[in-house]
Image 1 (cartoon, rainbow, N blue to C red):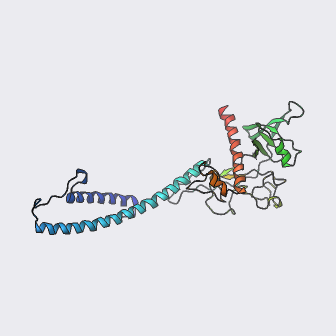
Image 2 (cartoon, one colour):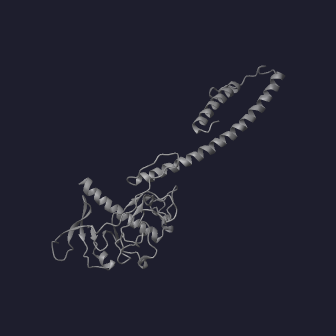
Image 3 (tube, rainbow, N blue to C red):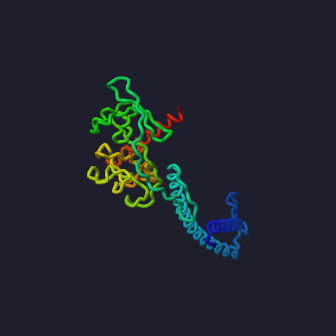
Length: 320
């Protein structure tokens, strides 16, 4: 056997064909229902042939046992190889889910190119405000996300600081913008989703939340309002973790994500501190709720705000 799996499989297939021909010559073709004929006829026993047939039976039994062991080995090899292949298929699906993830082809496992270092947070989005129709309604306008993409919004007054007052102004069916936080907001029933379009990074292969080069504001800061790096933007000493402006005064953070954060819970993937949705399937909804944490909920709410904004932009610029 050679070291090349393709040549080894070819040799095995050739050997199997040879074994099939030998078995057919000894026992007849099972597909045709033939049995080995007795040389002495149905009522006579040829002793020499009888003894030779007994030796043949012993040899066939040994061969049968060896083939069963070989079959088990091939089955284990097939299972291991298939598991490896499925893992790479799942990895490719994850990478392809994140826009612009280049691939490198080599004899090593597939991996994305290193992401570019995260740029400093952009300045406040430029506002274009139109006067309200009456004195009581908040002003309307549009917020530029990129030079060619903007959203029509109702603008929350900048003088408001209390999140309860801010969320109290968010009403259906409008899309709102909160200049103090640089967040959009929309109400669905009793829930207010708020956030802005962040970055979606290729999945992180390395374990742990520290030392992730070029990835900022993906995970929540455990210090919260006590963090000394809040509100410093791209300045030296700025905290690389996310601070929710509705909970941390002075924050204008926009939360970023990894592509794996959108994977739903299933048999092949269970969400953890590294990301992934806690809820996703109706079938497992009650079981998933039992283990969902507040951190899981906050992350999925932020993802939902991100998806809502993407949906609004798609509807405006592609559906007209």
